[in-house]
Image 1 (cartoon, rainbow, N blue to C red):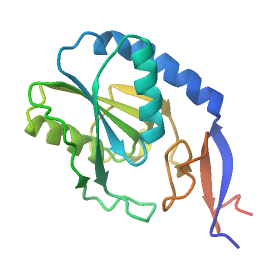
Image 2 (cartoon, rainbow, N blue to C red; image 1 turned 60 degrees about the vertical axis):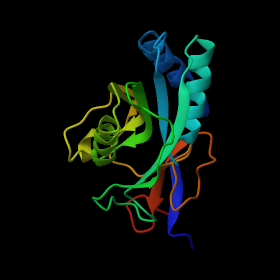
Image 3 (tube, helix red, strand yellow; image 1 turned 90 degrees about the vertical axis):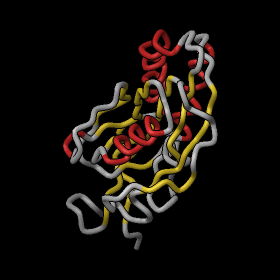
Amino acid sequence: MDPHHIKDILFTEEQIRDRVAEMVKEMAEECRNKEKFVMIGILRGSFMFFADLVRELNRDGVHARIDFTTLESYGAGTESSGTVKVVKEFTVDVNGCDVFIIDDILDTGRTLTFAKEYLYSKGAKTVRTCALLDKPSRRLVPVEADYVGFVIDDHFVVGYGLDYDNYYRELPYIAKVTFTGEKGAE
């Protein structure tokens, strides 16, 4: 028997697509016509969201230099270790740039806070943040994303780039994971 089940689709592919389009409308004016504009995706969970945002922003006349970083605080578990580390450094020079950092989920706040501070330490002029999901009930560090796709309760979720031990990233929707032994698990 599997130790977990994918239960309850929280956001369908269509809901995600519609929300990304709404977010682009919210973000486009701020992003457009910046001379030194960089978008950095936090891998691996943000890759689908990041790609959809960048494509939609491009259709809206926004052009950015694009890069990625890998920051890690979870490993193979479902709980943050409490320590954020850079696994893969971004390579674009952000000195004097307006930077948007794109993340999959704002949970404890540690990763987003670390990313902002790290970008400022590399000379970023401004750092704006965008998260697909926000779990405010889990916040340990007082940080809010400038742009948020969806606010969710304290569920472990997968799909649309989010994973459980590197599984389920490919799902076109976001679903709740129920672990064996939890109320409602089969």
